[in-house]
Length: 234
Image 1 (cartoon, one colour):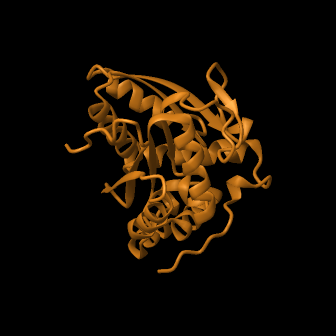
Image 2 (spheres, helix red, strand yellow):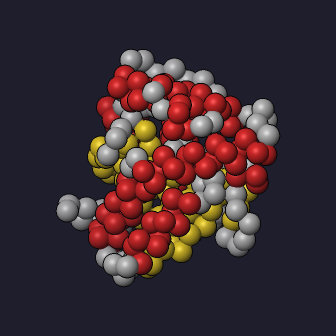
Image 3 (cartoon, helix red, strand yellow):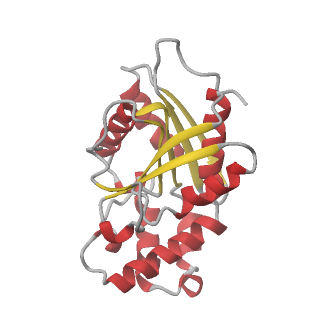
C-alpha cells in the first residue's frame, strides 16, 4: 500500500466553525479509545525515566484543543510526574481559550533554543512530506532540551479497512473522509526510520521507534548533548 499525500479537509478553509468542532470531537474520541492517549503517555514516561526528571515542560505542536496532553498530564500526576504544557497550533479556531496557547507554524517555532524539556506532537507527522518532516524535527530539536516525541498513525491496509467501516461511529462525514486521507498519507515504521536515520546521522541523533495499540507509532528523537545520550533502555 503506497503512500498517497493529499490534503485533509480540516486543514483547509472549507470547514465551518461547527464542522471544525465536530471533527475535533471525533479526533478526541479516537485518541481516548484507540491508542492516542496511551502512546503519548508512554512517550512522556520514557522521557521522564531516561532523564530522571519529575517535572517537565512540554510544547505540544499542532495541538488542536490540547485534550491529549491534558489527559496525559492528569494521568502522570498520579505517579509523581508533573507536566507544564504549552499548546501551539496554526489555527486559532483549533485552540482552547486561556494561557499558554500560541498561534504559529510548526516549521518555524517562535521560541529560542532549549526552551522546553520536550517537544511533542500527535497526529501531525503524516501531514508532512519527508522534507517537511525533517524540517520539523530540526526545529523541534532546536527548541527542546532533551527529546522530541512523535505520536502518529501507521499506514496499513487493515487500518484503512477499519476506517472505512467506522463511519457509523464517527457521525461526521468530514472526520470520516479525513480519517481515510490520514491513513493513506501516514508512514510505515520503516519509512520513518529511513527518513530520520538518513537525516540525523549527520548530527548523531538517536531515534527510538515503537509500535503501539491499533496502528499507532511512538517516536523519541533524543537531542545530542555534551555528555552523550541519556540511558533510554527500559
